[in-house]
Image (cartoon, rainbow, N blue to C red; front, side, top):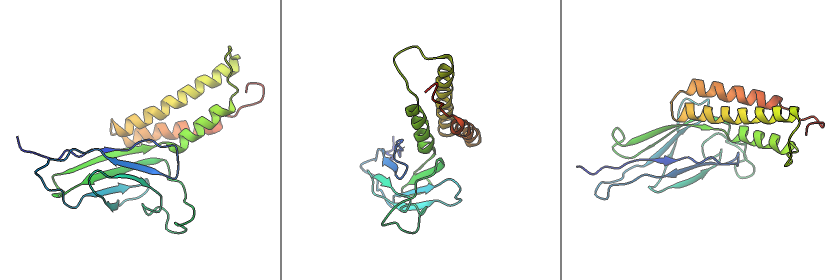
Length: 183
């Protein structure tokens, strides 16, 4: 059997909205050359990828400036990466044969909002009131919707349906408020 490179990327979920992490998890054949390794990332709303020259074994923590999402004040503050579908490809020469591509649904912003809503709740180790039970049930449902959206995009390759689930959860989660009687 001929030796070959097996390209693979890890894109961990991060809690920092200003960072986008990508790690090379590839297995490289010892006797094959690795030429022109490139990481191509297309953020949500963009038509063309941003190309980054990398070295095998890379472990990147990118900022919005590194991807061209922010073009001014890059030495001072950054704007957060938006949630949404990122298309990420990694290739080495010859490009037409050694490439891997992923659709990644970034959910950092919505998870931050979800955890903030959980922190607003006064959860105690006793039986909650009926209205608090309903609120907790809604929160579990929203978390399931977020997980389902990621699964639809990343595993089922159904971007449209995944974004529909994400937007539904986002809109409903924004409406959750905690009044003092149940919080």
